[in-house]
Image 1 (cartoon, rainbow, N blue to C red):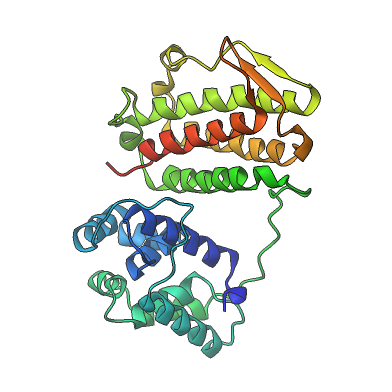
Image 2: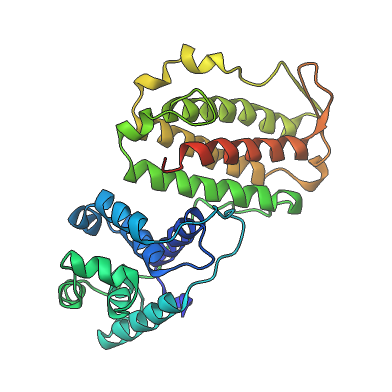
Length: 304
């Protein structure tokens, strides 16, 4: 069935899977799927009031300990039913591809699920979505991902690149659904606002960019040190807008993914010396960079 899904539909499933991990759910439930669909459908997001939907789901959906994004989470039986209904809806309309609207109708038709109840309370029914679908031509097949590297990735880098790409997707998500007030809130484990935390990640990205590029051309790397914390205040990241900062961090890391994808296997053990610290391998430097990004981004992207 998934081969029929449009790129937007696939992205919606990706974000539904992220929501499931944030809620600590063992399955991608209907409410997570609804949040994923809303992320990819800005008109519907405005119509339903995103913050109200989140509040409603938070009050009614169980929460558990967060699950790592690297753990596979299957879809629930309700979501499987919704996918089947979406496929039937596309067939009935004579449309080859399954898009966001078909998936939305699929959720609505599984009337016992939480997503259907939330939508019904906001006056969104099958007739409304179906009327819209009838006016929209069958979506074209998704274009190939031009941002993906067009050359082989060294095996030792595959997992690191995968985790960094997932983090970029999550950052894109939170750039759109949150506002300036969200960016100004302070972290629990660090005396920074979310804006300042992104600023620090920007400093780390620019430093590591130079180091990773050096690894492509030099037999060893020796640098003065990691970007100090006081750079954050000196650059007044708090004066920048939340979308501006996240856009910059996302762009830097999208380029880092391209750089990392060009590093060959034989560079794996390239020695890296940072200040007076003992040397580490290039592989360890990359691992530490991704771990640092995941740890700090996990704090700043959390809904506190």
